[in-house]
Structures are given as structure tokens and as C-alpha cells.
Image 1 (cartoon, rainbow, N blue to C red):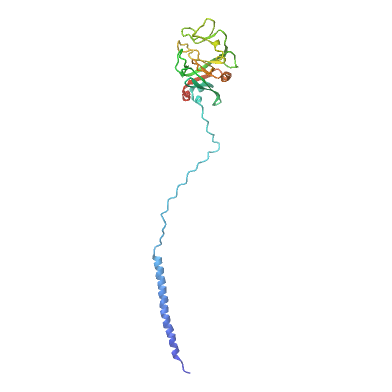
Image 2 (cartoon, rainbow, N blue to C red):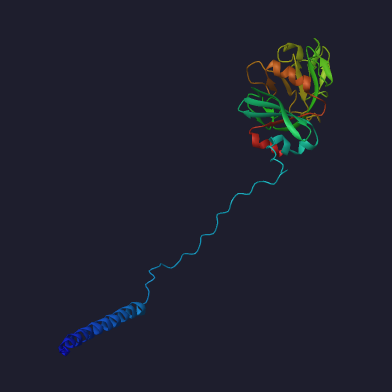
Length: 266
């Protein structure tokens, strides 16, 4: 048989055809490596902005520890007076002209409690420095003295009942100036107490000018209001005046001022 050697030539061609294929393969491999190398050599872009410092936590209100006492309520002006260490009862009179707002305060334990609040009158010329005949209520703090009137409402104070011969001596030249006297020989300018049955139904003496200095002023009382300014006394409605006498004790004080903030001065 003829050996057909010529058939191997195509095989060589296949090999020759494969070489370019291998070269392509190698080239492709090189290209891939080169490409990969270029990608790997390229620095990674982070693109991240610089981180901001964390904000400090907001402070939170801490709950009050258990057992913390509640804040004490505000005390009235009388609690801040020097008198508050000397007496347990204070009558405050705050004037605006001849009109006045009147309150009665009592100390209960460590607190001051308002037992009475009303409106009334003071002297025609208001509250201020005074002397005989000025129709002005004396400014300042004074003890309250004995009670008097046409009837006793049941007071703890010493009480004097008005008679037809009861006088308050207001004559500065009289040795008994600024005192209560019984007798028929007194006359004006002294005050005949029985002539004022409405105002003096219930009354209490303001201990002003107890030294009885002539012309310094006399006959200042707290009494029943008649709807008009007084000659220098403090007046309040009858019902409140009666109640005041029923709760007053010896040692009480009155403070006459022209503004609430002035109460603290005493």
C-alpha cells in the first residue's frame, strides 16, 4: 500500500495555526496581567470626608433624690419684720390716700397666717408724721392697748364700756392729755365717746404718744367704719371689727404704712 505521507502536512499546519493561537493566548494572558497590574497599581480612591468629632451627650436633668423636701412657700412681709420675733399678732394697714387695705396676721407654728382681710379708712390726710389736729394717721408700728365700746363682743383684751361720762382727753394743756377719763367737767377739744355709738361700738386703742407729749397727737383708735375718712383713726367694717376684737390677744401690734414693701422695715 502507498503510504500517504502527505496527510501529515495538514497536521503541521494545525500546529502552525495553533502557535498564533498560543501567542494570542499568551498575549491575552499578558494583557490580562498587565491590565490587572494597572488596576492594582492604581491607588484606591477613598472619597471619604474627614470624620467629624462626635457631639458630646446632652446633659439630662437628674431627678431629685428621694426624700428631698419641697421648697417652702413664700412668707408674707410680716414674717420678715423685727416685730415677728416679739409678737404673734400683727394688724397691717396699707393706705392709699384716706383709703386703706387692712389685714390681720397670726403666727401659727413657724408660719404666719392671715386671719382677716378687708378695706377701710384712715385719716383724711392719709398716713404719715402727725400732730394734734392734723387728721393724719401716725406712720409706723405701735402696740395695741385695751378694747372699749358700747358692748363687749367677747375679747381677750382688757375691756372698758363707754358710759355717758366717758371722755378721751385731747386738750394738750391738760395734765391728763391722751388718756381715758370719767367725769362731767371735760369739754372740747376732748372727745365725748358716747357721742359716737356707731364708730365706738367696737374699738381698740392704738398706743401712740403714751408719753403724752403735748400737741404730738391723741385719741388714735381702731374702730367701726362709717364709710368716710377719719380724724386719724383706722376704721373697718363692723363685722370685721367685731371679729378682730374676738381674736386679738394682749401684745398685738399695728403697722401703718403707705406701701406693702414698707412693712418689712419694722
